[in-house]
Image (cartoon, rainbow, N blue to C red; front, side, top):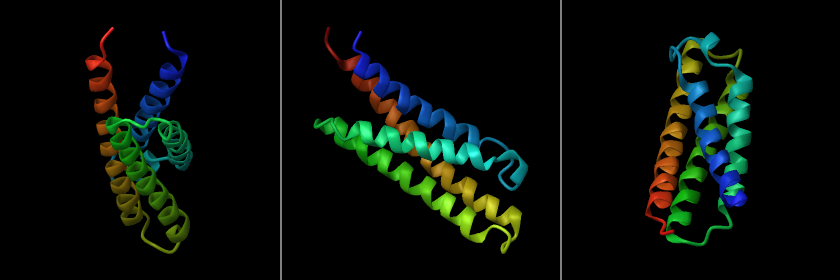
Length: 124
């Protein structure tokens, strides 16, 4: 067992699950989406992105690009939440934020699928 690969896989899967936890729920109900879960998803996603910088393979480049896409969407969601909270209709703002996190979730799912396919294709 390679500890580096365990940590790498752990952060990729944790980023996806935290993002899913924030995304799940009614899209226009702000009580179903907690701000701390969004910040946890951003933090873990940024850590996963940093871990992907060391991989110089073609799959590593695609993993990095999916992680950067997820980071961009989650950070945009946080900026929208911070900038427009209180001055915008809360249900409409929640729809924008959850939609952005849904896009980040899609990028995280692609990243996990690539990681699994790379793991399966490895020879012993």
